[in-house]
Structures are given as C-alpha cells and as structure tokens.
Length: 177
Image (tube, rainbow, N blue to C red; front, side, top):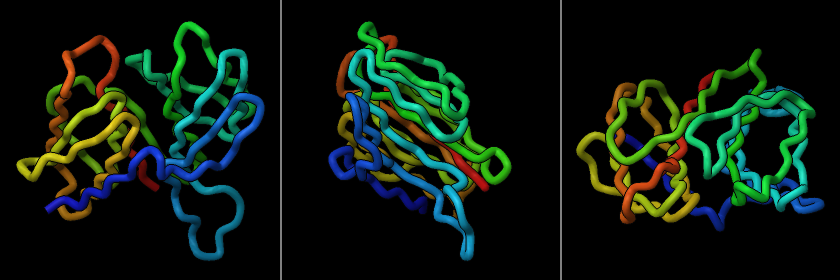
C-alpha cells in the first residue's frame, strides 16, 4: 500500500510576505543532522499581484496556472506578476549539488510514477488515486504527498469534476537527494 498524505491549501505555512508577494511553503527537505544553511529543496506556492515580484535565493523551476510547461529561473532573478495570467504559481527551488527535482503538469488521465517522493498539487478540484487504491478528493491547490518507498513504480490516475480545459489539472513534483 502506498502512503499518501493530503495537505489542504489553507494549511500551507506563510514563509514570506511583502509588497504584493506571498510565499507559502508546501514542503521542504529536512536538513541533515548537523547540517547548516538552507534546505536542499523547497516547494512553494507563490502569489503575485500584477507588477509585484519575487526574487528566489536559489535556482529552480516554476509553472503557473496558465502554463502547461515548467520554466527555469536563476537565483536572484525576479519573477514578476503578470496581469494577463493572474493566480499563484508553483515553484520548486533546489540546490543542484544536494538534490534533484522535476516539475511537470498533468491533464486528466494516467501516468507512471517512478521514484520515492512525489507531490501532486491540484490546479482545479480533482480526484486522484495511486494504483487501484481509494480515490482522494483534492480542492484547488491542495497537495497530495505520495511516498512510494514500498512500491517505487506506481500508476497515478487524475480525474476532474469539471469539463477539461487546456490548462493543467495537476502539477507533479518529484524530488530526491
């Protein structure tokens, strides 16, 4: 059986808030015992008002609610709120010397998951299941943390309660150290 823990969007911890930018932490790697500095990776939900900006302190990937592909950013490079594409975006920042990560989008359907830890963040109200286990209901921007240590190759199925649109149904994140 696969371990899945759901974190609801209102429960995300606010880690930064200034000048029209709010950053909420979805998940982060725990520092190794005796470690110092920032965590090897962190997954955030970033909300920007039009014209405001966010300057991440590490490189990474991000995807907005209106994009189907992930984009890269560098440390200190500002990401500016776009009035034509309002809404929050998902950002994965990481230290490439200590972690590997990938960020992708998914429409309704099935996908094979290979690895140990995955996150599925609902872009719209959706339900998902791993292999043939029970369905999990996710609200907008809720996250399912999927632990595949007991079954490192699994099948993810995502369905929507709404008619399909060209925007993503879920954001998928895979991280490892």
